[in-house]
Image (tube, rainbow, N blue to C red; front, side, top):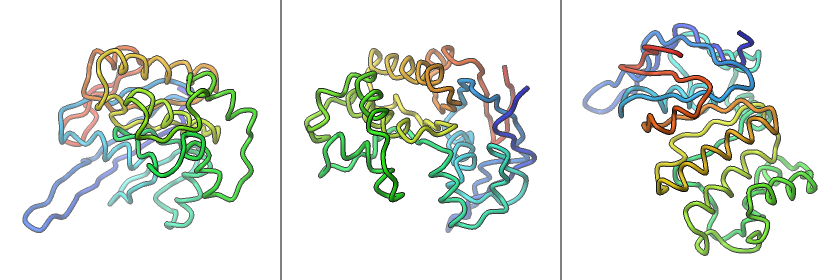
Amino acid sequence: MNSIVTLTDVNKTYHGTTKETRALQHCSLSIEKNAFTCIIGKSGSGKSTLLNAIGGLIQVDSGSVLVNQQELTKMNKKELARFRRENIGFVFQFFNLLQEQTVLENILLPFDLNNEKADLDFVNHVMKYLQIDDIKNKFPCELSGGQQQRVSIARAIVGKPNIILADEPTGNLDRENAKQVIQLLKECQSLFSQTIILVTHDIDLAKHADFIIYMEDGQVKSYE
């Protein structure tokens, strides 16, 4: 397997005021490059924590997190931020769009934050492909949920990251829009040679993936 993500014996515990939550327990897995992988499991199984560890959004307590040949556990916050900018695109359940900015401004936000010049030809190509080029001057409040998620996907893609991490991206969408989002992500995987890692509780949507990882009690129980 040509792995782009390898976790080895990873542990993560959240320390609350009254109890501890062991989110990841001796968790190990490999994810193949340029594949579409779904992570499924019940609420509290560790799915989102696993995704956040892969994205460098959290520090794990122990173990190895190797992403695109870089060991995340040895990076400081500044190095992790740079790693995310250069390697990862994020798609969230709640879209995370800035309400006071237009569709186009939201999509270009990663470039603005990095003080980088956007490849406007590619940005326009992505917007046209996702069928949002005609709403680029509208604001998020003027869009449907499906349109907002398309904008979120565009924002994740335009920086040409190696990996797209999607955390319950269909959670706020109806069935038809949910299917469209999964199909769009699959097409982006093919068109832009990206690795897609998606967390979902919906087994029917997960069936569209190349690989399915099932999590329970902070561990990978099966991988097929």
